[in-house]
Image (cartoon, rainbow, N blue to C red):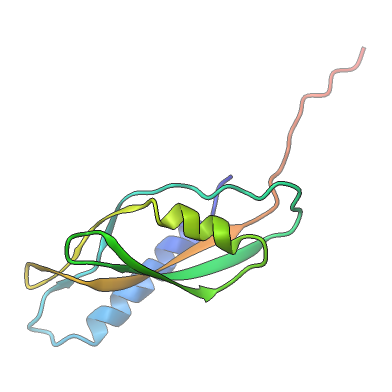
Length: 121
């Protein structure tokens, strides 16, 4: 199941720009970087779609410190939480020193398309 990776990247970049905008120009802030991801599973017997938006706080050691649900989607929130908690991050840095920081992560779920090759005789 493919999720909204494009949306994820847009939201991450927006978070970076907003974080950088609030910083003094003399400080060099680098947001947490995603090292590895895990795709959420699409719930069985579900035909709807939805978007889950999470705020992921990454500690100075690169561990996930907290995950806050900013936008729920019925039937999908738990899958998004389970997946993002398995992600690995490089911590944010401020003037080269690791710091705790938060980034938004969005998962867009859409109904899977099933293709089959129907052979006729």
